[in-house]
Image (cartoon, rainbow, N blue to C red; front, side, top):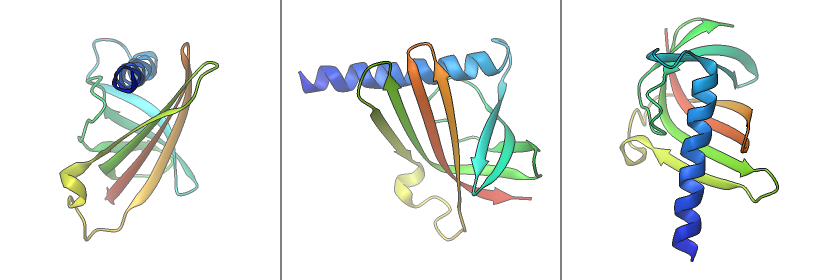
Length: 127
């Protein structure tokens, strides 16, 4: 029973992410524009949008600053309407990717038809 709930929660998380990315950009585009708050600053990031939950490609800051962000960890929290939150975590390189670099935490929250989604990304910034 618990495995089925986890699979259902993971599927709902992927669908919610797809809904967010799909609503942020055209279906044929390779990138999406998503608003994130990174250490208190509001940024608009251009990010890969292949609808995979663990896209490790760099994002580009297009508003609110400049430079690029390289993700090293993702935490997705999906809360279905009237349900309990489900959290999925992905860490690049088993936690060893860019381990000696300073990181920044970026958070974005979205309302989707099925509930709400919060994406927390730990990134390394580059000029």
